[in-house]
Image 1 (cartoon, rainbow, N blue to C red):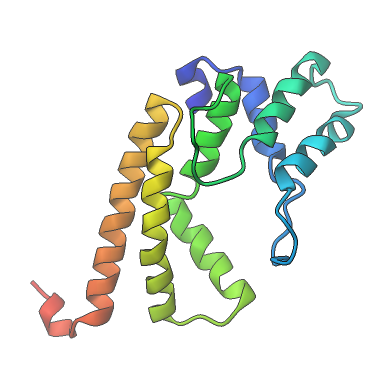
Image 2: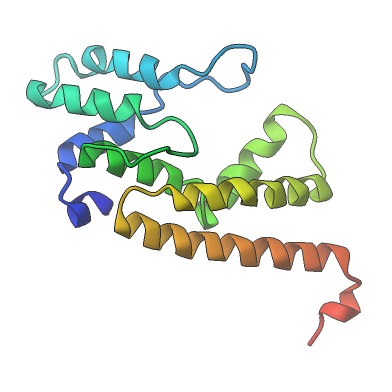
Length: 170
């Protein structure tokens, strides 16, 4: 949805979106996260024998190499790289992020409702930083909407979990 709004090459952004995490490893906190470079290096082999335009592969690789991290010191260029970063980070904000967060939270260690709420509230500080780093205007607007939703969600969740039920009723 973002690529056409900002004039990015849809083929490049879509290909980068499909492949940007193809070498991401979960649960290996002992090693440095190099999945951006490793995924980029895998692109040519993955696309070999397809009809994807060879001339666009460097742009796909560039976008993938630069999508890593939750904050930016400066806006990314070209627009395809900026677009992939914004879309990848938008997936960490809003309702979709709640599904992702809930699904993976218990995968590595036991969780309780209180622990999930606490992690979510702690995540909000990072989420605010992500929203400030969007590269594109449509990305900033959408990040603002999603961030507002998350803030309402965690306030409501905390209220329902912490207060006796009779204080939650109208």
